[in-house]
Each structure stands twice: as structure tokens, then as C-alpha cells.
Image 1 (tube, protein in one colour):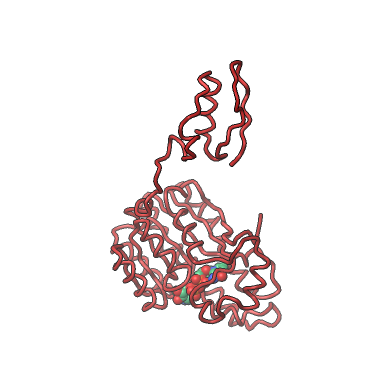
Image 2 (tube, helix red, strand yellow):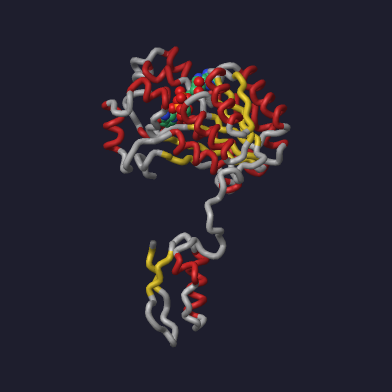
Amino acid sequence: MKLLQVAKPADYREPCMIHCRSSHAEICSSVLACVLGGTLAWPKHIEEGSNGPTQTKGLRMLGERLAGKAIIVVGSGTGIGAATSRRLAEEGAKVCLADINLPAAENVAEEIRSKGGEAFATLVDLADEALVKSAFDKAAEQFGKLDGAHINGADMATLVKDTDILDEPMAVFDRTMQVNLRGHVLCTRAVLPYLIANGGGGLVYTSSGAAHAGEPVRPAYAIAKSGLMALMRHVASAWGKSGVTANCVAPGLTITESMKERNGTKSDFQVAMLEKTPSVRLGRPEDIAGVVAMLLSEDGRWINGQSYNVDGGVIMI
Ligand SMILES: NC(=O)c1ccc[n+]([C@@H]2O[C@H](COP(=O)([O-])OP(=O)(O)OC[C@H]3O[C@@H](n4cnc5c(N)ncnc54)[C@H](O)[C@@H]3O)[C@@H](O)[C@H]2O)c1
């Protein structure tokens, strides 16, 4: 809540300090109109604390924002990609879950279908160009079009061997580039023709706070995640006029189910990261999923070429 100081009209009576939400210009201007117009009647919605005349009282239903959209999530079997797939379906999208771990993707697709959503799973390996192309082709064939993609998969197993640039086996570096960066390039090449044919659509890549952090370890991971930001800006500038938007989410430490299984929720690293985080908790996959859903919806139509740090405020730029 902010205080808005209004000019005092000639027939002014108390109060002149109006409590209003800073984001609701309509409220402020209608209050001003009432006050300056000489009626001095408080609009009812201010007294009642609702969101004002241009909004309905209830919450927007989760089923509407992505209704009719066809979206593919690459790297959707577990963690952030699984949460995004669920969220997209909850908002009405038809979802193709592509993953190298097909049984995991099939489980999430089945869960979505059991709740009344539309979803199917397909095999993809980000290291395999033919499989990448066929996953996008299958999604477009099944749904008749593609409106968007969340390109999220990464080989997380390489992380533990991603030491420093002198020590690191080049095979680890190459594998990280192959899956975490080149794989996203392959996905981009596979999806763009469908988005252009569709008259536009949204692309969201999962980068990482590691792209900004400047850490003494995991250089390959950070280089790949920085590369995604360059890729995203290239796509945004080259195909923005075709109606395509491209953006990144850059998560901070997000506790996935597999992390919980491996490390619990109170490892030294997690405790240290929470201390560095100016928020009350670490990330949940659903935190990232909500931002991806927004970027792929009409609410994100005029957001292009941006990277969103979704990290509880660890990185502030
Ligand atoms: N969890 C975090 O703290 C965190 C933070 C920053 C960024 N990220 C990024 O978020 C994304 C998702 O990670 P997560 O934490 O949910 O981990 P995760 O391991 O649960 O998810 C990764 C997904 O990618 C899939 N995958 C792995 N290799 C693949 C390949 N070759 N082809 C296709 N799919 C493949 C996996 O099967 C899995 O479903 C990754 O890009 C990761 O770098 C995660």
C-alpha cells in the first residue's frame, strides 16, 4: 500500500491522504476524479479494499490463460520441467512432454491426463539431432500446431565433474556443451519453423544463476547457461517480427525431488545458499513453472529477449 497525496480542491474535507495500490492507476485516477470533481464521495471499491473497477472480484481461473495452446517441454520428466508441464496443463495448454527419461515423462503425462488435461510423452535426447527433430514433429503433428516451447533439459550428472578450467576433463566440457547448449540450439532449429508457420509463439530456455555468478567451479555449466542467453537474444531479435518471443528463466537453487532424495533439505550447501538468499526459503520447481507459464501466455506477449532471475533475490541486477 502506498500513500497518494492529492491536491486539495476548494471544497476539500478530510481525509486527503488516500490509501491505494500503486499498481492500480485506475483506482488512483477514479479517486482523483471523485475528489477533484467535487463530489468527495469515496469510491466503494477503495473502502472495500477490492482491486478496483476494471477487475473482477475472484481469482482468474487456472484453466483459462493457456487454453488452446500447444506447448512442448523438453526435459520434462522430473524437477522444473515436470512442474512446468503440470502448470501449463493446469492453465489449459496441451502439453508434449519430451525427455530422455521416457518413463518419467510418461508418468507426468499420465498424471495430467488423469486430472482431465491433455498431454503425451515422447522420447528425446538433446545430444541427438534426429531425435530432437522427431520430438518436435510429433508434438506438432499430434496437436496440429505449436504455440510454444520450454527448452529445459540439461545433463546434471556432468556437474559433479565440472571442476575448473585447468582440471576439467575435456570430455566433461564437451558433453556439457553438447546437451546443455548445442541441444538447445537443435531444439530452436526444430521449433522455429512451427512457430513461424503458426504466426508466432513463445520460447523459454532454462538458463541458471550460474550464468551470472562468476564461480570458481563448474565453468562448463556456466558457459553453457550464458550461451543460452546469447541464443535467446539472437532468436528474439531475428524472429521477433515473426511474432516469436524468446526469453530465459535463470533459477537459483531450486530443490527438486531428486535433490531431496540425494541430499535431503538441509545439506551444508543448501544451508549456505539459504543464508545468501534474501528470502525466507530456497526455490521450488513451481516457482519457476509459474514464470514460464506467464512468459508463454498472452501476459508475456510483449516480453522479448529477457532473462528472468527466479532466485528469491540472490542476484539483483
Ligand atoms: N534445480 C536447480 O537448482 C537449478 C538451478 C538453476 C538451473 N537449473 C536448470 O533447470 C533445468 C532443470 O533442472 P532440474 O533441477 O529440474 O533437474 P532434473 O534433473 O530434475 O531435470 C532435468 C531434466 O532433463 C532431462 N534430461 C537430461 N539429459 C537429457 C538429454 N540428453 N535429453 C533430454 N532430456 C534430458 C532429465 O531426464 C530431466 O527430466 C536444467 O536446465 C538445470 O540446469 C536448475
